[in-house]
Image (cartoon, rainbow, N blue to C red; front, side, top):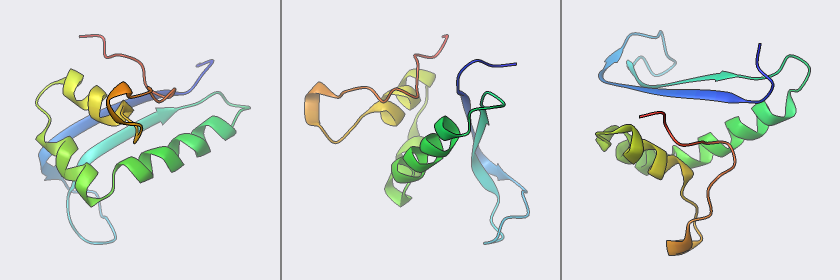
Length: 94
């Protein structure tokens, strides 16, 4: 149903029971959809998001109050103020 990778990120600060390995509720939920015959973008995306959401990245994401703040955090790179946008993310609808 999709022609390119699609991602949605949700925050539930109080957490959702998810039967996780560490026994803690999930507070960051990431949904991805990718084209049926193209696995590479999905694998690359998961690699990128795991690097972004280290312990500090998770704290910063949970502190976001708007979709725009989440977008800015998830698309920034280590290249300083110019901030080349990660190609996986597109601006939120609102």
